[in-house]
Image (cartoon, rainbow, N blue to C red; front, top):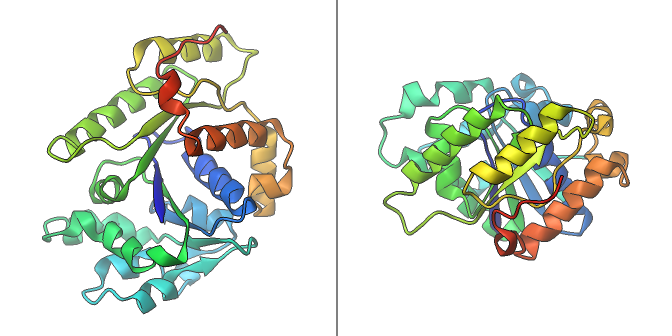
Length: 266
């Protein structure tokens, strides 16, 4: 099972949209996908029309269990409308983990252990991260095999990217190395000077591998969420879905690093 993490230390940059859309596109290709909601705000869980407080089992049960089993993880997994796409739903209680269990030995590897229990049941695990640096993000980065950092094309989002890259350096400082990653410009609006200038600034000033394209503003994402459908099921030819399909192709084909830090003409 390949584990992809979608993370940024700023909210509102299309992390959840990125995670859900990529998961849906992988499922569309016949891959078995598990989408993990690692944010106490539970955006992924709500997206698929589940109320976290009404679920008997969720990700929190796995984190606090002293007897983590395959059966427990399976109990926590919930189906979606897509036969190939399941979710591991969130809970507001996840926000208490730093206080309750932050000092417990091995707690930063708990998500990795959870995923190992069901690794043979899925082709991909896509993790939607909380924007806060804490035990949840540490768990995500410890389990990460490929890191996707969405960044809204506006200048306030640059600080979130800076913090995220510093966190990546800190977490992997004493490990075998930083996993492959890509920075994905999102919510791009070519009608605005702010988007155009922000995109140029991104591509000129950040050393991380930058995707050569960008995800445009697309109202179909909002409409898809209201219908509780992954965007590619709601409208498979919307401009946003087409852009994410290209991103998925580039990640799977390993194309990202071949055009690292390439500045496109805007």
